[in-house]
Image (tube, rainbow, N blue to C red):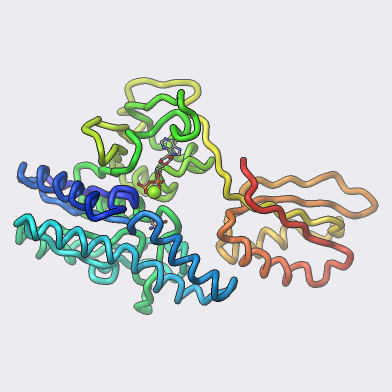
Length: 341
Ligand code: ADP
Ligand code: ASP
Ligand code: MG
């Protein structure tokens, strides 16, 4: 039996009417006799709403509790879609990260998937049920709920497609496919019919959020073709696949941007004492990704160092820097938020 993994993003399940539209698409595919695992994101705006509630309490919450909270968004949409499918006479079963035994490491809010237990799905698929899987979440070896980073449902979908050896992983979203630039900002951007994994990784790493970068990495490692397409159209979208299978090659594939960076500038760091390596070592240990780095030439035995990282890591990075810079006398740190690149 052909097996397909479909993932529907937040904008595709934003209202009950949209969930019904998704259910109709699923029903159409199921009628062809395809086995289906449908991964859903939280309803549009829900993850932000939950994170905002936390911010109203504290800037430095327990990461375990934040994951426990934000993972609920996906559970709501999975259950609502399963209920909608059943109301249409289609057998469906919602499954959470722990029910699917999606095992991750213990890094809350940025966990990496270690294993997916294929057996967890078997009974549902054998019974002809549509599995409606919560995206974005897993469980660590201690049984704690973890989440995979913003946009992580893409990665959940690819991980399931790889584990179940699905023929393709379809990522349904609110644009027709992958464009040469964000079509919401650049109206002349062109939709690509196909793009290879490496080029897609490059675009995702430079800020194009149509696919989470980890999902592309995982798809490349397991050779899972991804089709990015719209929930609201019959267009075939964009196939993201292996380079050898790509038909055409362009010199420039696309342009990406990211408006969610924060810039740290450290002035007056002592020269020759390995301050940059201490700083980047400590940030790496805290699992914080640093993006653009600029260091100036030393003057009077001091250096200035600037780097950017994702806005969501701002407070964690500040805490790390306080510890690292505790004995760098005379050094001071400036922070610029919401900068673009
Ligand atoms: P979902 O909720 O379905 O996961 P996202 O908002 O995460 O959707 O991703 C889809 C959005 O990605 C589009 O609405 C679009 O604005 C944006 N985007 C950024 N760069 C690109 C690109 N190169 N091609 C297509 N969409 C892009
Ligand atoms: N709901 C999560 C987010 O908003 C995961 C996802 O949508 O992929 O980031
Ligand atoms: Mg997304």
